[in-house]
Amino acid sequence: MIQNPIYVTQPYMPPLEEFIPYLQQIWGSKILTNNGPMHKNLEQELVEYLNVPEVALFANGTLALLTALQVLRISGEVITTPFSFVATAHSLFWHSIKPVFVDIDPQIFNLNPEKIEAAITPRTTAIMPVHVYGKPCDVENIQRIADSYGLKVIYDAAHAFGVQYKGQSLLSHGDLSTLSFHATKVFNTFEGGAIICPNAKTKQQINDLKNFGFHDETTVVAPGINAKMNEVQAAFGLLQLKHVDQAIARREEIDRLYRKELEGIEGITLPSLPEDTKYNYTYFPVLVEKEYPLTRDGLNNRLREHGIIPRRYFYPLISEFPMYRGLPSATSQNLPVAHKVAESVLCLPIYPALADEEVAKIASLIQGNYT
Image (tube, rainbow, N blue to C red):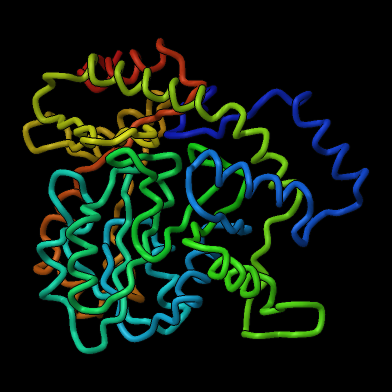
């Protein structure tokens, strides 16, 4: 058995002694959930940190997606990407909404706006793009198309915490954006998520829906769900927020090291950095092309033999799973770029605790030094 394997990501864990005072406050207040003081504080601090109008916290990112669709009353068909984590499409499935898959851009791997209009039908009500790896979608062209056809735009921004595009929060685009605070994310609350709301009225509607539809103690206004973030999660988020800038800075250093070590290796294509963007360095994907001596899966296996655990994000495509592959939009002919990227992508480890020596080891293995 390999000792101390290096995974693609690991959560940042602040010192335990920093967390204990938060737990003492929770125990002292005797409020464990239901919009307690930690929950309220984290929402306000995130509003300020992210520079957005309102934040509604959730127990996880999938519940945030489900509620975003509900509050906007999305139905019928929604245009989305096959190159994402399966929760993107599952949130549609749970609302009996038909996902319509559109191919991705070959450079940034996000939904390709040039393919969207041809997929619009009379049943289309929304577009759900994903800021894959935290890189901004073509938000201007997506919004132009949405406005032309009267469609809503919901961004799955699970990877995009803290990302700024052209001087403003990337999360301000579209009708709603949702975040994931899962343990593998740049900012985490163990499990967790959020909806970025444009105004207080929308936030109140979302708050009702995430609490079974209760508007007050005796009034239920909609068939909501239990999606509330508890106080321990919120407390951990408050602590994480104190360290997140330092964590992102370290991720940037690791990104720079990878680029230096891997530059010029035939058959290894490095990701381009987004322009006009303050990036969060949430993932480090590479494409393993046919010129490389090993296949993508061969390199994946070789790294694992040496204790490196990369991930093939996102393989297979969502459109390949049994519940979606029968859709007309799921055919490989409709998604050639997405299939090519999914079959060649490999995400390398990147997280604040990853040492320079470990980055050098990973790069050396990719360079072909297997001993």
